[in-house]
Amino acid sequence: MGADRGRARGTLPRAVVVLGCGSLLVSGCASMPSSGDVHSVSASQRADSQVQVYAVPPRPGAEPNEIVAGFLEAMTSDDPQFAMARQYLTVKAAKDWQANQVTVLAEGPDPQPNRSGDRGADSSGFTFTVSGKPVAVVDKQRAYQPAKPQDTYSQTIHLVRQSGPDGTGKEWRIDALPEGLLLGQSDFQRIYRSVNKYYFAAGQNQLVADPVYVRQRTDPETQMNLITQTVQSVLDGPTNWLKPVVASKFPSGTALKSDTKSLALDDRNALKVPLNERASNAGDPQCKRMAAQLLFTLRDLTTTRIGQVELDRADGSQLCVLSGDQAETYAPEHMSTTPGQYFVDAAGHVERMRADASGSDSSGGGTDSSDGSDASVVTEPVQGPFGKGEQQVRTVAVSRDEKRAAGVSADGKALLVAPLAVGGELVHTPVTSDDKDAKNGGLSAPSWDGRGDLWVADRNPAKPRLLRLAQGTGEPEAVDVTGLNGAQIQQVRMSADGVRIALLVSEGGHTTLRIGRVERTEDGDKKVVSVRELRPGAPQMEDVTAVSWAGRSRLVVVGKEIGGVSQQLRYVQTDGSTSAAGTLPSVNKLTDIAATDDDRMPLVAHSQEDGIVRLPPGANWKTAVKKGSAPAYPG
Image 1: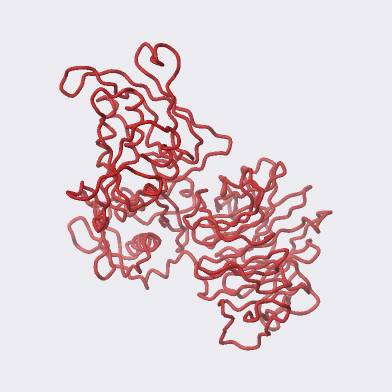
Image 2: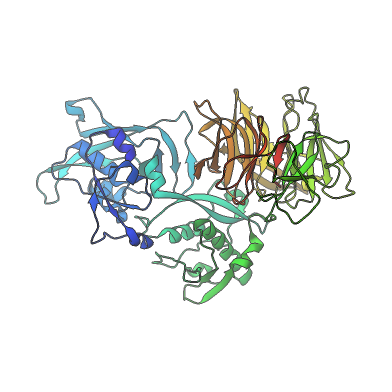
C-alpha cells in the first residue's frame, strides 16, 4: 500500500505488490518479471523511484470498501493500460475512464462511506466520498498547476452490483468516479519527474524552457519509455501558459512514426528520432532548429552528454543531424562560464568577487579581504563609475554580457547606468521615484533580461509602476501587469530568455512570488510589452523575502512557509512545483539571494548577521565579505 494511503485509510486491505526490477529498470520493467521477491510495500520502499509496483485484481465477494481501496491503490501501479485498475470498474466505466490527468493530494485520498441509508448504501448502490488536501493537478498537456492554499478536494465514487466474470453471482464494481488518476504526493514524486522541454522565443533564435511532468518509467497508457514520452511531449507543442510567447519549429501535426515506443541513446550518446510524414519536407535550417529543441530537452532529462540528434523521415531516410556543439547557437542563455559575483561594499561602491570558490584567478590586481571574512576570497572594485568616485548605490544589476551595470542611488530615487570599463560615463536615466519613503521603498533592484533590456519597479504606493528601458537606454516604458489586483511589486527578476518574469508582490501583509509571461506585441509602429497571466511561483510560502533565477525553469527563494515561523531557503520550479533539489541549508536573516543558471556556481546571499555569504555545491555557507550587501550575478 502507498505510504500516503497507509496513513489515510489505516486498516483498508492492501491491493498492490512490489517487484524489485534490478537491471530490468533499463528497459522500464514493462512486463512482469519471471523471478524476484513479492512483498508488501513499506513507506520507505514506496519513496524509491526504482521500485516497480503492480496491482492485484479484486477478490471474489469483495466488500465495497475493499473495491474502493483496491482501485485507489491500483492507480499507483505500473500495469499496462492500468488493466488491474479497470477490473475494479464496471465494463462501461472501464471503457470510459482515462488516466491522462493527475490530481495530487498531500496525504493521499481518504475514502469514507456515506452514512445515509442501509450500511451507507443508497437505492442504486453504494457511495464513498473521497477527500484530501489538494496539492496540484497535472493536466492533459502534462503541465503542473498548483492548488490554492484554501482549496479542498471532495469527489464521490459510486458502486453498483454486477454479474461476476463467470456470469453468476453479483460483485461490487465502480460505475462513477473522479476524472484521471488520484495520487498522494509521495506516490506522485515516485512515479513522475519534472522535465524541461524547449521552444523558441517568438521571433528569436533563443530557446525557452517549458516544464512538464512525465512518468519515470514506461507509461501504462502509451507504453512509451521515458525518452519517448519526453520527445512526444515536445512534438505535442508548448503548454497553454507559454504558448503565446514561443513557437515550435516542428510542422503542425508532426508526431513520432507509428509504433515508436522505446527511443534510446546509442553507444555514441546519439539519438535517432523517426518522424511521421508531416515533417518530411522540412528544410535543413528548420530541421536543425527542430533537432535543437530535442537536444536541449534531452540534456535536461539525463546527465549523459548528448552527442547528437538525428531526425529521420517516415521512409527511414535522414532529414538532418545536429551535434551538441552546433546546438549552442540556440542555447537558452549566453553567459560566461565564469560569471562574476558582484556586491555593493560598505562605501556604496560595486565590487566583484572571484567567481571560483577557491579565490584563485588568473587576473591580477585584487585585494584580499581583511575584515575577518574568508581569507581566500579576493574582491576588487569594478572598472568605471560604479567602482570608485562619489556616486553611491544601494543595489546593482550587471548586464548578462558583463559590459554594463545598473544601480539604484543610495536614496532609492534614481536609476543609473554605466559601462564596466575605464573611462565610462555615468548616465542618469529618466527613471526616478517620488516615493516619500524611498529609504524603505523607492526603486527596486534592477534586472537585465537576455535581450539587453533593463527592468525596475517603482514601489511608490501613490504611483506603483513596472518600467522597462529598451537596451538599457532612452525613455522608460510603463509595462502593464494584469492580475495584480491591487498587489504591489517589490522585486523584479527577469529570465535570461526575456519571456518570463519573477515578481515579489505584497498584499494583505504578505509578500508572495508570482511568475508572469512577458508578451511583446505591435501597436502600429510601436512595440508594446506587457506581463500576463501571473501564477504562483511558491504556493507553499506566504512570506517570500528574496528570489533569484537558478536555472532555465528554476528559482531559489528565501521565505517562510504557510504557518511556519523560521526562514527557509529552497528551490522551486516556475510552474509552482517543488524542485527535486528541495530545501537548502539555511543561514541567519537573509535579505538577498543571487544564483546563476549554472548549478556548479555557488549561491551568493546577504545575511544581516554574516554579510556576503556563499554556498558552493556540496558545501556549507561561508562568509565571503563581512561588510557588503546586494549580491548579484549577471542578470
